[in-house]
Image 1: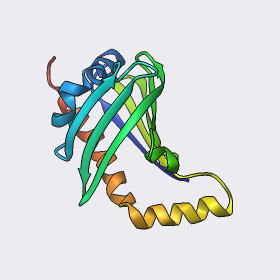
Image 2 (image 1 turned 90 degrees about the vertical axis):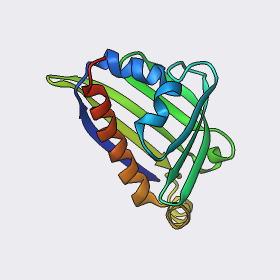
Image 3 (image 1 turned 180 degrees about the vertical axis):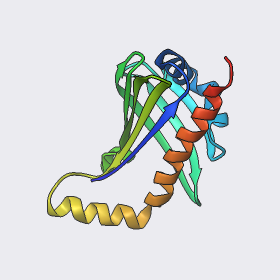
Image 4 (image 1 turned 30 degrees about the vertical axis):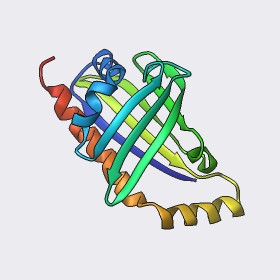
Length: 155
């Protein structure tokens, strides 16, 4: 399984970050220049069971995906998984928000692949060949930096 993790400090309390994710349809395009579109197809980006769509362009790779929010703990945790066809590669991600002295720490995680011994390793190699994993890692770090700048502005 390929797992990517990024931690960044956000100069805002968890409530403000959660509210920002709640309004992701309005905020997605200004979050990162590579972001093209985001829609909450059913529900809200922070409610369990909701279906969302995002479209991002990362170093020549177009990532378009529908996801389902599978866990949402207000002000602290949000987890989503890819829907078909990306569900075939066990794709998902999460955001964890931890209170900190100078605001919050946002821990973003993305994963793709399986933890099967031989088949999982072979699938990981195929995925690494097909998608730009290093560019995804860089994109996640940039999202944290950009979100920190955005939320450092007065509300």
